Image (cartoon, rainbow, N blue to C red; front, side, top):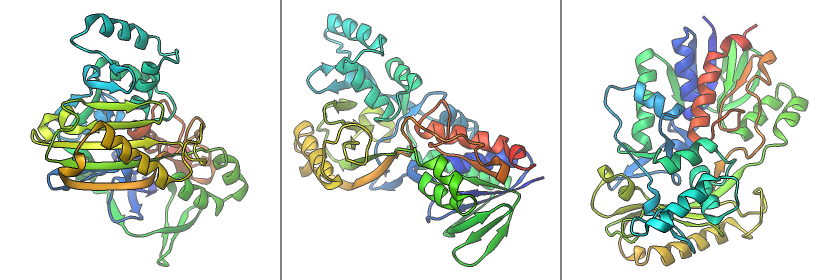
Length: 378
């Protein structure tokens, strides 16, 4: 049995802890914030599962498969449909009342290598401006990008319940100050001895901790990471300003609005739950600079909401927004999981190399780290 300390209780850390525990290791998880789940969590406010921007998960992807296995209660899901998805300047992607246009657009989307606005819009909706995912792009066309009836808090809750059942200790609040081979030092003065450390926190925190072990390697590993930021607005409304549409996409400005309740009626048949996001566009983001500040980007997103969801501000039950969040921890370059295995350190998170992105990348890398404990304990 190996002693494993996981830093971070987001999806990657929770998945790693579960996998490592099932493999027979003794696992402790430390989370700096007061809640587990990271950016994947949500909070029910006025019957709306409010989170940190829009989330769509891949049917039978790593995240979906894991949460399905952890409970006997069936997860009810519904998918984003292209006949209810509008691209500004292009109209509905697969309009039911226009078979000719629908068939033509289907053929356009089949060739994902083109720069056609519909192709680019579907890449934006499926990958949220990150590295293009063929899996998610294809899933969008087949109706396999999903919203659940539980919200993200419910799905993270399944993970938490499974960890509690197998006896994993998760402590929220402590912050790791530095690490060394076999020992972790906390800000509160405590020292924890361990055999393997899994850094399942964000790349900025991981870089700082790795620097305390090997500053040169930390620079080599992390200097090429490019994050993508976003602004988001979450609205709980007593009206339906999108008139049943699942999504509206402004490709030019990289704006998207989702209506969760239109996609998944089990979340509530009255009113709407809009989640709007503006992706990238700052000088610090990869690609074209479109905004001078995150505040300007957020203001432009509100203008887009007013234009496409007319009257929303007269029907507010809940509203939250944030000018700048990290949407993708890494763009095209990611870090190998075993880069620091010789120091008994493993990596897990969306910034770690793998075939998936977003929540699936977090879960896949976490489970992989849990299975690779022996590789870091030599």
